[in-house]
Amino acid sequence: MARMKAADAAVLILEKEGATQAFGLPGAAINPFYSAIRDHGGIKHVLARHVEAASHMAEGYTRAVAGNIGVCIGTSGPAGTDMITGLYSAIADSTPILCITGQAPVAKLDKEDFQAVDIASIAAPVTKWAVTVMEAAQIPGAFQKAFWLMREGRPGPVLLDLPIDVQQAEIEFDIDTYEPLPVQRPAMTPAQASKVIDLLTAAERPVIVAGGGIINADAADRLVELAELVGVPVVPTLMGWGLIPDDHPLHAGMVGIQTSHRYGNATMLESDFVLGIGNRWANRHTGSLDVYTRDRTFVHIDIEPTQIGRVFAPDYGVASDAGAALDALLAEARQRKEALNLPDFEVWAKDCALRKSTLQRKTHFTEVPIKPQRVYEEMNRAFGRDAVYVSTIGLSQIAGAQLLHVYQPRHWINCGQAGPLGWTMPAALGVATARPDANVVALSGDYDFQFLIEELAVGAQHGIGYVHVLVNNSYLGLIRQAQRGFDMTYHVSLGFDNINSPELEGYGVDHVKVAEGLGCKAIRVHQPDDLGAALQRAQEIAKSESVPVVVEVILEKVTNISMGAAGLDAVNEFEALAISGEDAPTAISVMDSAAPVPVPAVPVMD
Image 1 (tube, rainbow, N blue to C red):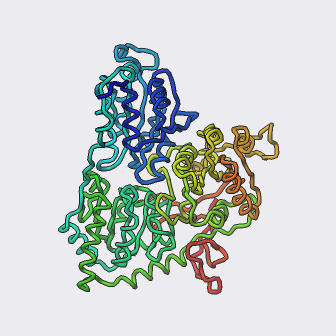
Image 2 (spheres, rainbow, N blue to C red):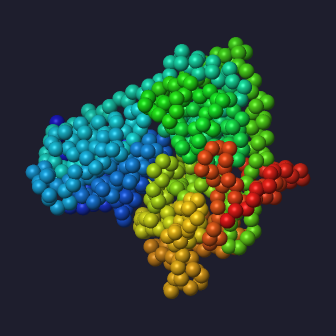
Image 3 (tube, helix red, strand yellow):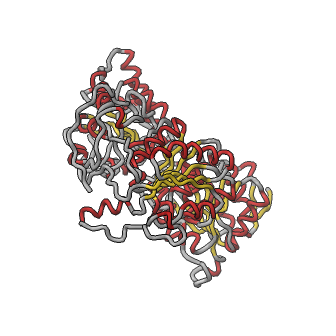
């Protein structure tokens, strides 16, 4: 066998496991590992400006393409603690990323050595496994176990902490005979599939709630096939958006108290049976559980057994990989179809489609400053069916999920549960690194944009082109809206008179100057009729110059986005609703403009 440094063995394993893209920052305690990366040459690397950003880049890279596992690397001490937010985000959204940190020499641990912290203990609650590898001979086994854990069961992140002397020690290792550990996943049995189909066919108004677990299983095609076979409408979750094209006749709309469609909520409230596959009943999806579950039968299928019953007790639960479950359900449904033993849900599906073509929110506003709804209308026009959207939390994300359109899996990449501000930009860089030919479009409010704004320089340095739509109302918009219940707007304004850019008229940071100073391009838009041209020009520049291009849209400062705090039946509509096709011209199912649909009057609230 070959004799080599443990760091060299680790790099060889990364390549054989297929993890050939890393994001990170070198440093004293991790330099032996970086030396191995340089000498080996099989691992590509993007130099981040902040280690938290590197972890989010790894998330975006993983989620962009099926089978990817992003790697983020940092030195000892604060590099590891900076990654904790990324690890939390990754485990919350079932995203496998591998974090590798340097560490003080083994003999110096527990002696308060410079930048020596017990990062494995700190990271343990937000990883599937976090370990400081104390013996060089354990490096191959630790990396092998890490990749196995990231892939098996519910996917998630792992942290490997490598003392500098462990990295440099020599071991015997044969990469030619190294093999990744086989991954076993639970699979639905034929008897379980029969039980699920029995419950579905006993219903009159069933829906399928399709979650991100189906994307993790790379099984979107099987989800659509099942829906079409049984004729049942599909409600994608925010993490499952794109599993079924928005314009598919059986796409029933998203459901929730924030990122939802009016027609989606209406359909859920009319349903009598819900089949959840690869979802976790997130609270922004369900709202009040009493409203959500009332008078409905529930089946829950999830790869992680302890997820079943965690939020509420389903009528029937199955621990299964989403892809394996869909295979079993398809086999059972095909048999019943051949035996003419499936009910016809055509009337119910048409009712859902009618709601989709009538219960819409208005987007065509002409006011100046621009209303945010108009931005998403123009984005639908400019970016089309192939856009890969990236976003995190905020009013911009909530409104985007209500008004944008997604047509393919992995074309809406959103930080779902953790929702850290600053996530969008580095995640978009990770997505664009994984898919350099894709039309990647990031969506941020001004606060999210400012959190890790320095990462724009990463795109400029490494030639990572994408479009970043920045909707700027100089407010922490979501928090300001939440503070309405406390009758205050306390420390939520980002506006100030910028002495270097008085033309901003109190909107504060000059994002155009900052973007240009970081080596990128930027366009500022004040008029709604200029949005389309600006978005088109941004795409052209991103492609020709291979840099991030920011489109900053100056919004009205106060807009309340449709949202509720209780059940699906109590979502507040703060703006006027669409009553004709002219009100929502890029809606997924445009209203008949010649025959306006009456809707209840909704008071406009400040």
